[in-house]
Image (cartoon, rainbow, N blue to C red; front, side, top):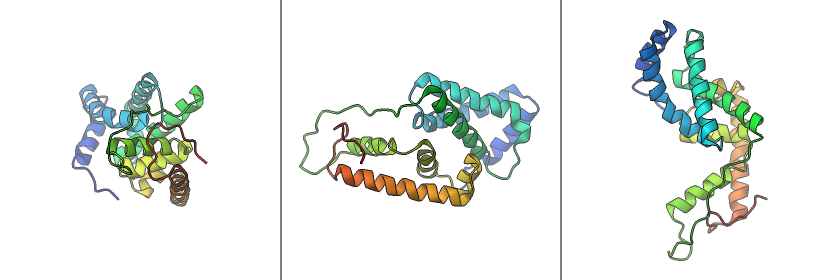
Length: 193
């Protein structure tokens, strides 16, 4: 699905230095991944302080367990796998409620036209109807461009389970979006079927 980022080899060099407890290498890797992790976790968790805590927890695991990385996947796959599991635990602890998308003022546009922002908000609301496991797979595949094999490694599921969850997620999203209708504006308060 995705090609290997140019800095994969550089990431591995940093990881080898982290195994030797090189703090500067850790800081470099931390800043390389913190923003991406925050963006991913913000789609699974609602509170910024919890997201920041989980990012720190993930990177602490990287610091502590760097020697355990087995090189069977990309380093980013391993790191996002840690983030996935930490996010599920944080959601369970917090009794998670899905993030809400603020209502917007109606746009003065031709009938039937949906602005890019409204479409994005509608998709986010539709994603919020998915279970955490289904949403995580959609996020990892479409927003972070991981292959099903990589997602399987991250989530600890067989590849066929990942494929099945993706199929169910797509079916659910199609059902929800069809029920909302093609001109549904973000924030109308429609509930999923």
